[in-house]
Image (tube, rainbow, N blue to C red; front, side, top):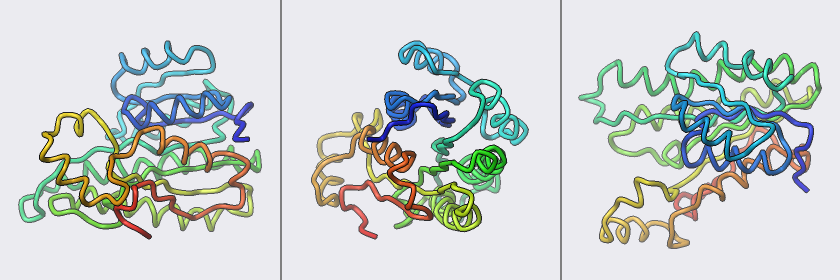
Length: 245
């Protein structure tokens, strides 16, 4: 079950906690992986950890020309891109009345525009193969909103609408497009919180804990698998009940 042997995956934001977990999970299921990010040293460490079938590709998703080149670089390394995981994302928070155009545009550019460019870039090869998986990593904030994060919430909500629209366009070609929407996941940021901060946040999560990066990665693995071939245009919420769809 969930055997990705012979499949090739491109994962953006692979140097982060969730991106690294996704990379390890897909690689562990047999896929060859092109791991992308801006922190070259971390990419190299991840590649060294995983061993064979790993290809680190540095890419700045705020640079549209670099984004446009990434599918080709990944295809050159892998042969094909069968699975695309649009995981990379940034935040640049501010109340809207104080938010600059630059803050808005950069977050939308990295979080949403790059997913469109990369998806468009891999579609031709997936159509030729008559098999493909595009998986966007959204956020519970895209469902609930959050004060001070209008740009981030808009970008994450946009990924969901984008996935639904693209899914309808390519379903007949054997390509599925889905979204995973994590809630509060244990990271270096949450580890740095005070006990009082953690207790306050946990009262809003019905399961009473933060999620783990591997729990998000398992959801991605499922959606990337043959077993999920009849699921498309959907959002899988991994949030411990924080927001119930």
